[in-house]
Image (tube, rainbow, N blue to C red; front, top):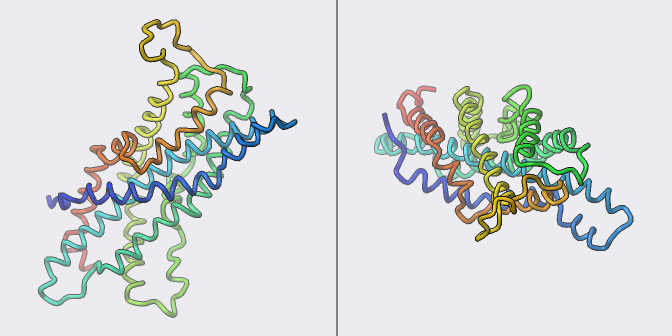
Length: 304
């Protein structure tokens, strides 16, 4: 089996980390909890209503952060290994003067498709997640105490609603479903456009495969597990206190909200974190990336 270049993971790591700040900014700008916390400090008359909004927004943006970070990692692994496969072929046949399959300008245009995940795809994901959060937590009182196990159950219910139905919905958040945004300008397509469209269509085929679905689900399970690990820190006794009695079995929802709200800074951190490294180094992700590379570095792809 052909193996991806040894720098493949390193390149993906750098690319993913560079995309996390704009992803975090996009989430925070649309789900702005900071404006609500600032408003609460003024002791407004509708304090309870603002707290309810803060509850929904805090959970929504953290859950969206987990979904979108997992999607970002897996999508970029696929895209960079498709490019890597074609670059292998370009290097193999380059001496024969054949037109390059993935010249730099095509690579750039192809990778810019990630903007869908940071734009329309992200907005749609937020809408779906927010509705699920509202259905799950909307009726839960701010005074009600939740254990870590009950918090995990709430997240499971929300995930079940978000992921209900066709898996194709999840892939749509990552890549625009219209057969080609570029094809809308059919009368003026350049050779670069045609090559980019081919790459995008091949990527869609990969995103629709059962193997991709399995890999993405593995990442989502790991991502939410890591989130719960982070939250568990707040249900443990303070450092240096060995007394189990000082560890809260549960916390009022009002105290959980600011904890949840701050998780986005850990999840979407451009500083290498356990969260992103868990996803990048996942064995199933690496194996799937190798399969993608092998597929697109095979000479038979030239016949398509």
